[in-house]
Image 1: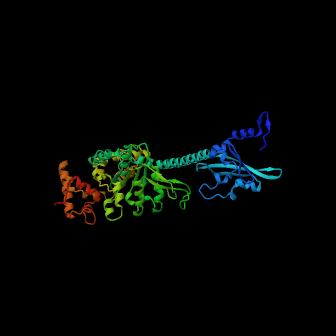
Image 2: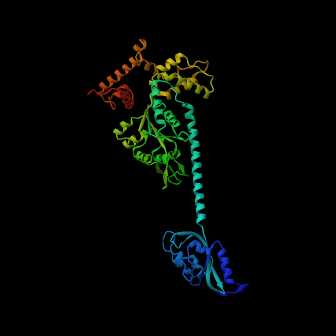
Image 3: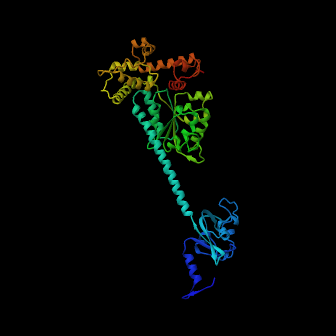
Length: 491
């Protein structure tokens, strides 16, 4: 380039100063594609040494392959296309290769240079877009996180709406019986630990209230207690309910959905009726519990969670394992600390305060004047066997409030089951008319009855003609009582 002096300063020098002042990388090509000049930004961005690139075909230096490593032929390069067709070529998403071998994301424009009607070269202006892509990625990640949090908040809102009714119906654990105190001591012992808990008990005894008490007394109490009713989940939707899914994962998946396990992150996951989970799906649950991670249905991204597990069942899971209907490894994973919730018939002292609690609640919900329980009512409630446990008691009291049309005395007579009197006779009318037993005498009587049942069943606990069947209780309950009364099969 011919130097023209302007006040002692050459035109080329001034042009170079202008080029070096530009923030974008700029370099020139002759008609054969060899470099004619490079500016300071191009040297900085691509790590070039000016003396080594002038006169060199730059495509072989910085544009020889695509980002995935596949060959990028010079004939296909938009930069050199400007030397052929004489048109401006713009690319907004590509990579140039740095002198040290790493890829630099760029956008660039290749503009042809015409001189007296002849195509003499091209000027390439490019910009390092690494920072922009980083910001866009962070913005996208933030958007996805906000979207996920929004979805999670919506599901927590819906979940809490469902839970309000449960909390209102059952309130705090009520009672002071010895059987309940034993359960409460177990709750107190395990609540502060991260240990998995298996709550055992008949239907309606309040297993969910025990789970809630464990959660509320744990270090996770400021996070959610998320319930999954395993008995109500269709088999085809099991994975979606537990782990969530992404939009389009299956027919009907119209949007992304967060599963219950992710919803319980940092909190507690309560698996109610865990014995109802199909055998072929138990392995997937076990893997998620052991690894503390899972993939949403249709997604390849692994989600890590920190969840404490509390499970509950009215089944004898040990027997289910023997029958091949429940995985042994999952059983031991869940039953690290079993908690037995006694049936209401073993909590006779708790019936009056429970009945009064449900009476107050029903009067409030049904806008009735405060009704009262008489001693006759309490005696009648105590003599009932309550096969439906606390849930049955609540229903009986609510039914009584509805049937009470006048006065302040509760109409309990029409609310109890029609076979209630027959059940009372089974209790043993002779004992009812006789002397009151001391606590020690009652304990010895119960032990003798258990021993008699075990002998009659030839020390068989479960199954047909087993002692549990003779006594009308669950095998797990019988096993617990045998341990409590220290009853063992004679050598």
